[in-house]
Length: 107
Image (tube, rainbow, N blue to C red; front, side, top):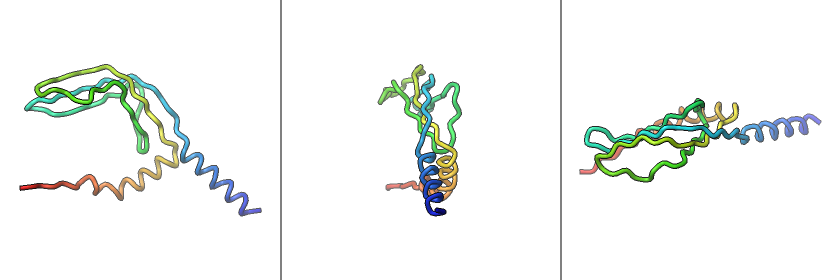
């Protein structure tokens, strides 16, 4: 009996881990490709992004010309992570942060 309860609890936790709430929000895309700056920023309006959340920006250009600055209005789909997924990403993310430091120099 206790194994059945434990299995049901783990199945419920697994489903809770996988479920995501989806939100559509407006956003502003700021692009710049000049000698002084090279950046792409997205300002989501009305939603806070946490660990484990996924953001997909709709309508962003795939390239920008040299010496061009563009500011666009678009929409974004935000998939919010559940509490167990946020906690998992917080723990695992701290162990994988050194992957971001990988830099190569060729000469």
